[in-house]
Length: 281
Ligand SMILES: [Zn+2]
Image 1: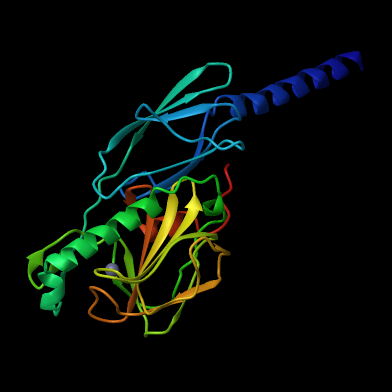
Image 2 (image 1 turned 135 degrees about the horizontal axis):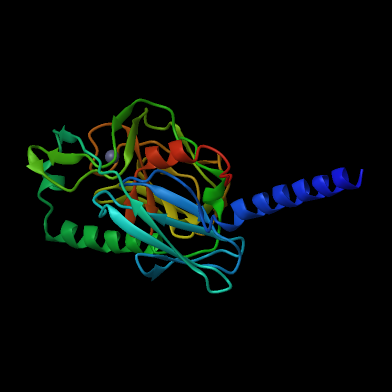
């Protein structure tokens, strides 16, 4: 009897320590694709610091960290986690290189193709407003609830494709385009706060930016109508705008983008990786 009790006690100790060991040797949990254009959400123990390629990342009180990789991001990165007791762990991240499509868009007006001085000045001041909105650095964690598609319709443009407008090579496309009739409601893919609502920008027409926290934001372009105001809090699924064809667009569609600060990410990739509440395993 005594022997059995000792054995049972020993078994309990072993199982308890192995459970503890699994948690203790995992300094960070990550969700997201290790590829160009991806958003990655991680969680560390409270009090830990995290550095991406030597640059400190903002760590939330609940240990959540976020980072993203642009279209042409380098493939090799290092993540350094320094725990509250000073223990250092380095994890290498190797991204998969992506191939991007070539897309030709014709029928763009001369006014848009060869902007005059006035329109050049206008578009550069508008670009400044967008950059400022994307630099918003809040502690919201709306991205943790995942992302839903903001409008239903066929995909007519994807992230990363090399664009030729009227045969001329221009900047790559950074959003996902959904074709839908003018006036189709656009819903918020995630909750957040409106950081920019502009009725008519030179290239992007009716333009809306929403902050989802920690540098993660959405951009919506070519809108015919914006139904929310600067500074307004919105919930995932709220109707925030209507599809249009304003700015450099040849037909009615929504162009939806996801950004991590100045980095442009692939909205389809992010939505597929985080379609609902983020749960760390
Ligand atoms: Zn587009």
